[in-house]
Amino acid sequence: MIGEFHFGSLDRGSSHVGVKKAESQTRRGAFYKEYIQGALRNPLIVGAHWFQYLDEPFAGRFDGENYNVGVIDVCDNP
Image (cartoon, rainbow, N blue to C red; front, side):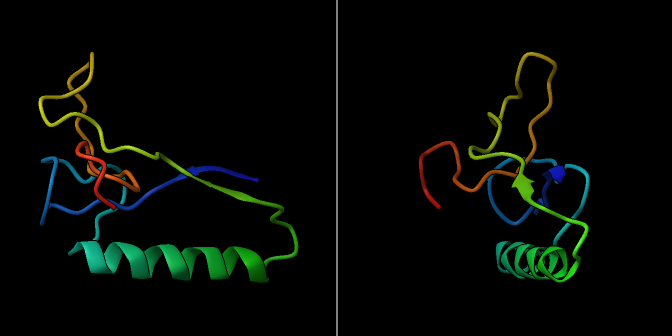
C-alpha cells in the first residue's frame, strides 16, 4: 500500500511544489496517471493514496507549509 504520494507545480496556486515537482498542472495529471498505471502493473501493490484533497493555504498552514498538491485548490476548483 502506498500511503501518500503527490506532485506539485508552481504554475498556479501555492508557492511550493512539495516533494515531487511537475512543470504544470497538465503534467501533474500525466504524472498521476503514469504513477497509478505503474502501481496497477505491480502485483505487490494493493492500493495507492493521493496526498491530499485540498491545496494547503497560500499563507501556509500552522508550520508554514503551503504545498500545491491538492486535487482541488483553496477555492474548490479542480
